[in-house]
Image (cartoon, rainbow, N blue to C red):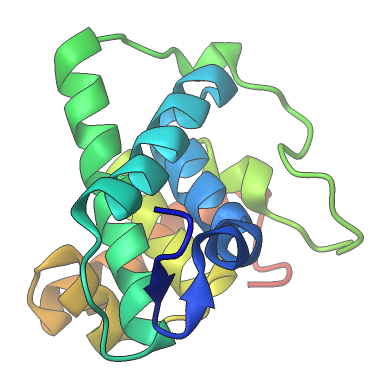
Length: 162
């Protein structure tokens, strides 16, 4: 299995390159590092076990994001854990040099908006790409992104650094 190549990258290269993306998706959805680690591992294990072929590296990345999202959904369904927003840290979740890091605020927004905000702002996907990844209508994504921004503004405290 170590000889497998996906979109021109070895398995190890993929893990190194996309670990932060998959981790971010899982943390934004689950709001818990330990649970996110489980889904992270399952995502990359599926890559190894299924060994799908990819058109290019962008196809590989969107596949990893889709699988990570589904792993999180399955994990939530299986464990039915309720996470209180009051238990969330008030400080940023990620260590970042970016002074305007709003990931901590995203963690306090409903999950359905959080995923879209994360994919748009952190992973820099366009609305049409998010719609494809999530299997939803682009207009729905556009509306949810708008609503998510409004909720994020309320949490963050105004119009600062949208």
